[in-house]
Image 1 (spheres, rainbow, N blue to C red):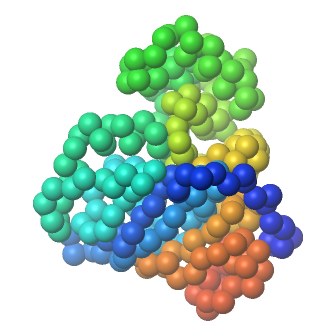
Image 2: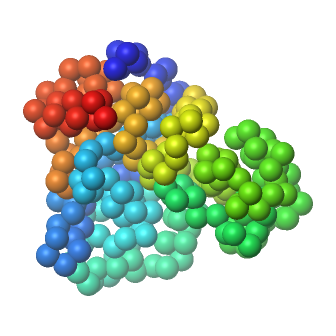
Length: 270
């Protein structure tokens, strides 16, 4: 990989701690244990990429982070604040719904399948959550929404319906929608995998631009070049555990794990 030996410029450090911290997280679906004690930290302004084979736990980890899935053991902290739990094991669930709502508004999720509302225009999709959930002034939200649509290169599609846009345009609209919440971190779950190669590059450019602004991001991706280009730290998951992690130059240029070497060999051969 030609860019593996390049290091992304370091973001300015702040006195505040990490935006997201996960400690010893376990997640199971019945007898199937998907996460087996995963720990990671997302410092402010850093991009953390999660890579690994299908079924390794990448997307599940992201959904647990945003409390879309309940974990059975371990801690999740947002800006140092731990999630409050009730119950244990398979009965464990968040104890404070108000806290869940507040944390989710600060951790905007971008899904693989766009998830735009088909009955709303692109502009209305971007405005919906800030107006309805955060109760912000519609005129102010509209101005920000239009600016964000222009930022991701589809300012001229504000009044279009989702079905009138290409997949790449819909995903860029979904990213604008996430940004309009003014989140502390973006969680991106395979944002390019549902797109044709030509359309992928539209979305890749937006993600690279956001990384250049030092936005805090957790990125699940199958695109190794994207991970190498935008990440400050890469985590390789294998069968629910962190097999190897480190700077992109280390993981892509000199992997230590046999499993990671096999994964990269198979991925780059596709």
